Length: 192
Image 1 (cartoon, rainbow, N blue to C red):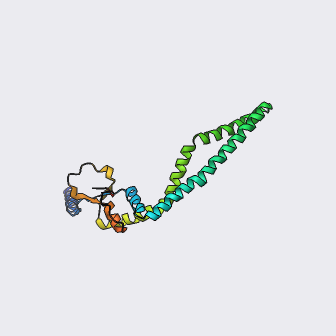
Image 2: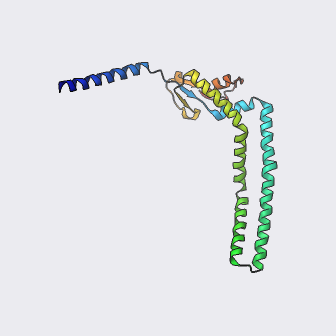
Image 3: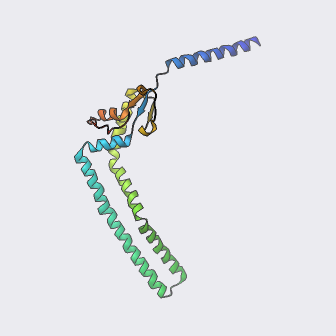
């Protein structure tokens, strides 16, 4: 019985000692502040020619792809509505009229929600066009976080009141430096 109690005490003592040693070797907390959207936007704007080309592609997409698509839906709606009205006057079978009414309603809903469709399609296209910038910023971010040994990364909105500002690392500035982008002088890169 004494051996069991002694063994338990020895294990507990080793656990406390290991915990104390681990607490002594734990590095100090470093909090990184990073906003990938803000940094990516700044990186895109730092190259005016590429940024103008991206904007031109977005405008072209909205004009050349989404505009004709809406015109096509309007044409389909008018045709379906005309067909439904003609078949109604001709006293076609109820099943045919119900099917045609369903198609007219579906096309009407598509046109009524067109602004949402355009917004979603534009966001998807913008994401597709900006993906290389986000990937470039993301790779630099990973490199900077590893080099600066940050324990925790938060968005600028998550930082309210930090008693010791020495624990904060502005990753926005470090990523911009790593990418060779001239740092903003008006604190446009954000962070603390």
